[in-house]
Image (cartoon, rainbow, N blue to C red; front, side, top):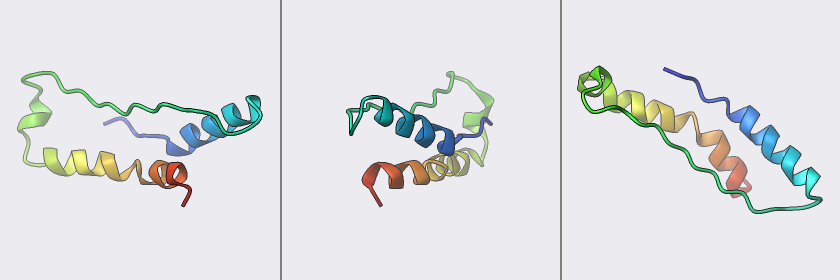
Length: 67
């Protein structure tokens, strides 16, 4: 499973904000697709794996909400 580098995303957003000299508009789309029939979908751990992926995004959510 690919790891999400939230610190990298936050740093890039900060860099972009500095380039445009102030707060800007950013659109962030987070997507994870699975092919129909992907063996990962049939595993008992699938729901837990998806929840873990979402938990990896918590620092990004905190950054975006200004917490």
